[in-house]
Image 1: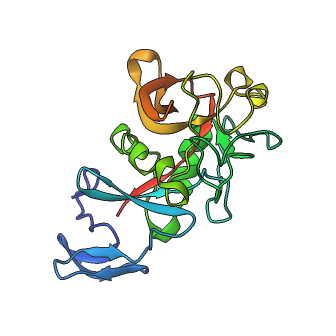
Image 2: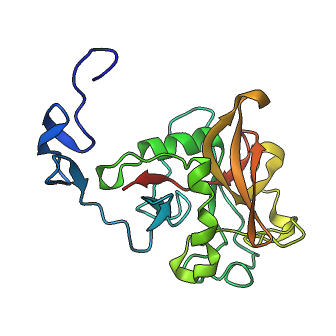
Length: 231
């Protein structure tokens, strides 16, 4: 029941229900034998990918939000901001890049204020999308660059931890208005805050072919945005 009104809350995807049993599903959902509704959304193709997290299926945007017509960067927050990383020099498609289908050049990065709203407003498949939790982020590596064009095509960093593979080192500081003007394409925003560190946001860094993190970054850094939804 809804805690504020005491009314029964229908299961996800349900338009009309009797308790926890759905009698009519929303458009885009199919009624199941157990009284629940299953989304007809197909998490596949060039923009979406299924991953497994502790036995549960999740759908992840396969590109940064803003880098496809199907993945809009829609937000209205006055403190939200996005940038496009330089496209003149990068080594994506080689080394840890390995994703010729999605260039590491010219990717969209955003601060956390924009990232959070972008995922909240995203409604592909009529589903609820969010930034990934740490638990979901931890699985990104298993579905990343080693799968080539069938992976998440993340922007790894060289083993020295200083040179992004998605832009030349001299182009790292072209996200003007972000923390340090730094374009951190190799980071992925997460949903979890660290209250002990004054509201900084937790994200993982893909460094030297492995996950390093969680890391705590200021909300004003320019970092990659990937949205997720539970299937």
